[in-house]
Image 1 (tube, one colour):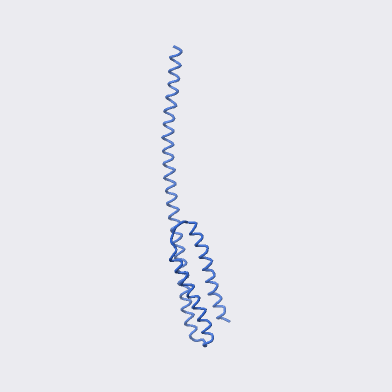
Image 2 (image 1 turned 30 degrees about the vertical axis):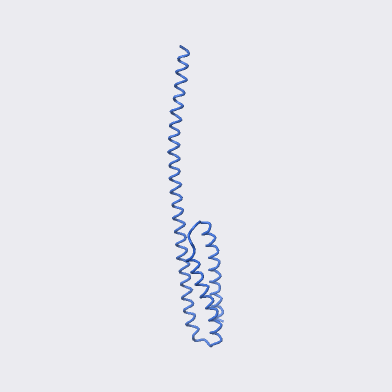
Length: 146
């Protein structure tokens, strides 16, 4: 009789462990599935934010490039009234600035969206180049005022 009770108790405990572990496995599988869906959603949101950042940056830079083009156009009009020596000096400088401005637009247009680290590197270098170009435009106007 003691053997029978012991066997039944051991069997009951074993069955309880089996059901409990099956329940935990199913719960763990569900939790893993939810975590995977959340991670996929987070990744999708990060990609969308990245693409939005790229698009906003491109629009911002294109606006600066257009502003530079208008500056060049206005500057060329103002230079028509200058004497030949001054005109020659500024025409060379403005032609170089126009070339650099166009090169920046081509560089921006040629950039292919790929990894975020590449984008950060590109953006840092491009910002530096745009700052240098902006400084060159500022220097030109300072020289023109003197």
